[in-house]
Length: 319
Image 1 (cartoon, rainbow, N blue to C red):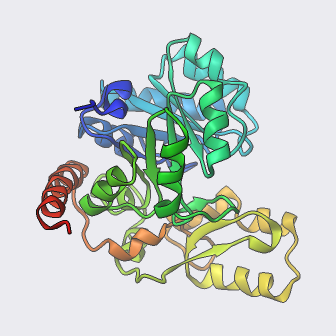
Image 2: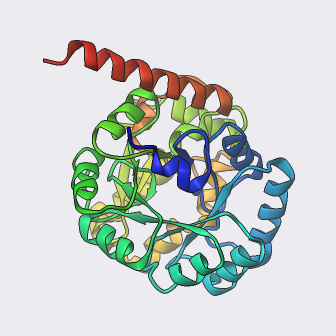
């Protein structure tokens, strides 16, 4: 039996990764995921090097387990400084998204850092593999936040990427329980990355309005904004988002306006301050499946156990 390469590469107990939550990252949540056997991830968002350095220091105080720093290449204007910071601080794993990772991968790997890249199509995955990525996170259209305008679903994306690369694949988008973990493994992935599911945990220091909105979500509670300007993002529906959608439907929303309306200060107003009227909250379609707020340890343990049970069940009942 082949060993799980995601666990081996990242030196973690369970192949479960916390998605990088830009600008609302919390060392408390990052460390909780790592301490529970997964891989916690600090999301840099638009933060400066000094802000990220503080988050790294606080995370190191809370865990001695591996964790990652996610850099959204085309989003953060301090990319070069943050890459150097990751190497200086000997962060075990770098997660690269929202841009071309190829220029940064060799230098990070020379420094002994494992590199994860986020991809949304087979072509992207093949290019990242050629550049030397250690792990590919294949993110489907179901996922929260900034999304690929290709709009490929996790169900179709994972098997196609897994069939066309040799690098270990992690599935992201629409996953929030043991069934999702088992399904991802069946599709050819060797692990999962989750963001929305970790919002509704005890350690997540987000506003209670955010957690409640996730808990109360139906299957249609999220929507995509930004299609008309080429900047797709999945968010929870609410007053602020409805007003944005009205502008978009009217055809009078410019790219500059959209960028302003979805800027990180508006994200913080929603997620941290809990204000649906002046800000927004990212969430994936999996929000409709979430109905409890466990500890991170309880969530990860239950996911692994449930995945084992689901796989055994399928083996017993397969046609």
